[in-house]
Image (cartoon, rainbow, N blue to C red):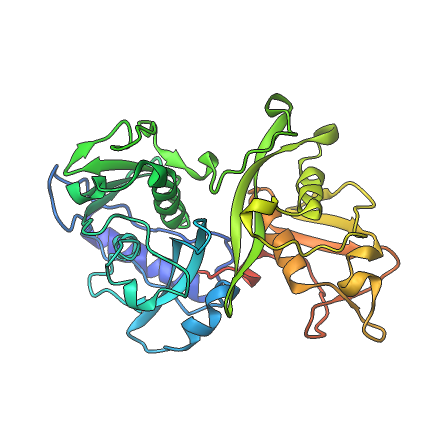
Length: 369
């Protein structure tokens, strides 16, 4: 464990890096926390860096986040339950904690009847049982985040167990150094979840999936699980929902298989939006080079099915965001370059040209613990 002085120096260097331009897709956590005693409260002793600046978050929450630009608030991405019972990220403007325990605060804002109640978007609800207290967090060198919660955490229905796990895991693993989550209840490490017995002894990570969808037409032995992003809407709130499903992989082309699945659209019973035109199709296998995935479509992918606005070839913003969010789930893909046959330059719906590959930072809030 580093001495306090070294921690302060490390934090100062980290802040300088953030201010000169942060380009990673996930959030990051610079300082490890001290191992907690079994029943300790407020375990986080180190002061953790806040976001260097408020970047554009999920489209779903932009208007809400812009409503309060006070220096005493900060954006937090929280995984909540939408009106369809799916776990989805929402970026909310929350008070900046004096203790700088931002990861603990993020979990506190997942608790029903907790501080998030007054700021929940229409149709959304918190996921952790009411009364749950976050007793401490402990980040290990191997990327494990041990979350210590109170006994109230056990008061949930069995059918909500996976949603709770997914919401906690995705909320915490958005921070760069957190790879998986382990659970303590009143200081006692858990090998299984307390209600339905889901195994968690080895930790729970994004690899376990989110909003899992089963397909009767896919051979699980010949397929791979992937997480795809589909748009959804609740009133004026437009947002993207991650869905983990198995896809058939043709000729070991995982990226092509993911795109073809997006072209087919989400399962009907998910109530998610299908935003690709029926005429859209891949014309070449996607190719990855130096972190940039090049994807070539037919003109059917253009907005209004090959309809162009004057001399501008417009691709739907939702189509672009679905592609970029989904494909950059693979850590090897840093950006996506979308091309269309016989089209020199693509434009977004505002008439702005795509002059370089698109990263997920265009759509997802960049924060730092």
